[in-house]
View (cartoon, rainbow, N blue to C red):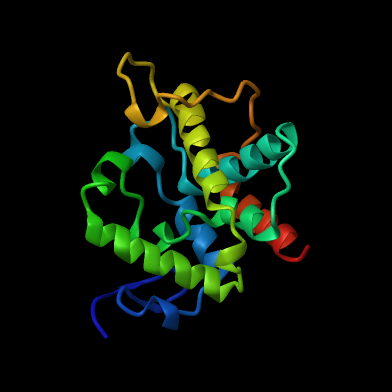
Length: 187
């Protein structure tokens, strides 16, 4: 066993042994609710948990608009797609691209989390989840960041969702995250 961190629940999380960890949705929601997106360069605190809720709600709306049938696993993945960040932190997209070791560790942890919650990875619609994540990024840029004139290459062809998506206040993000997970998981 290699390097580890102490988690909110008092466990040791070993980066090289993510499958041996006892994951709980409470711990994931807690850690994500305490991490600010965009390294804190936002108008106000905006957490990874709030981003995850945005992806879930936005994905559900887009699926209805485009008449896309989502699998249960895809619906859960919309919420949990950044769950690994509960253990390794949120790294901004431009930097993450230049950190292949980080991406590999993140992928292993993400798969371990899906396995822990018995989410069949083969049933996830990954292209849809990735497109919703980009749509959420475009939405966040418009609503949560200060205006500026720089192009973001990754958002070149992404249209900002026209309707306002209701998000919980930062102090309720953990509870709403858990509520959504339990509703979708037990469906």
